[in-house]
Image (cartoon, rainbow, N blue to C red; front, side, top):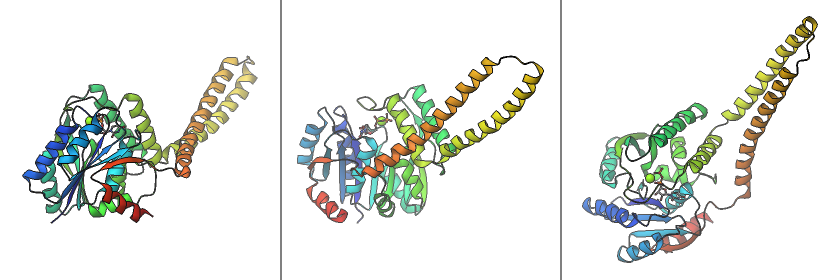
Length: 320
Ligand code: UDP
Ligand code: MG
């Protein structure tokens, strides 16, 4: 019998976490998935998420909880859950019930029928999210595909089902800063979509604001693509070419009009200043990534576990 793992990152989800756990358990019960584990990664929540999980885990031995020492972010939380997952079929799902756990059996059937290695959820609609969020998210995925060396499926979140083969490849990746959905796409194998309606949050508020999203978008683009470097050098080349033409123009026009051209000179200084700053900024982004990786700090620190002590020991062993 195949074992099911469900990985759920959660940050300040006191309003909803209990409902989420119970709904996932209900789906697993109804479909008689007896060999299973639900891994909640509590990403340093400062509300009542932890006590709620503690109480729940006492009556549900298959509910495992990893609690971080502080908030390390959504991607780190998902990565931690995936590292500890021991199932043959592994689901990733958000804690806010925007993605329906009722889809689990269909996803498994689809995976088995089409012999796929990964089934990813594609949002047919996104209810309860502002027009601006939908628009910026659309723009991000389009811009990303334009800049990235790999093409990623549009309108896809983290909601997906993986088999062991894909997960082992993911866990073997050495980079520290992981953008989960991008890396799964990069890993390859046979991946197929399943479309679903994305519901509004059942409770609580989104943990992402525009500043976080902007930072995430930049991190993702710079860690998946070298195109910004190429664009920067392209702009540099264009400027050299442009300034040569301009030089010729100045020489001719000086001979003809002999006017003091402070306006054009100022414009040029500002323009090239901008180009240089832009280029240095691009280099800085990559330097930042290298800096983070070279320090070799762990992606997250697990401070406490519930029902998961043996899982962690096994993982520590395999790591050392
Ligand atoms: N999350 C997390 N750490 C964070 C931010 C979010 O573990 O620092 C979790 C959050 O609890 C949720 C999932 O990541 O389960 C997605 O977050 P959210 O629903 O706020 O994002 P949105 O759906 O609005 O993009
Ligand atoms: Mg959400």
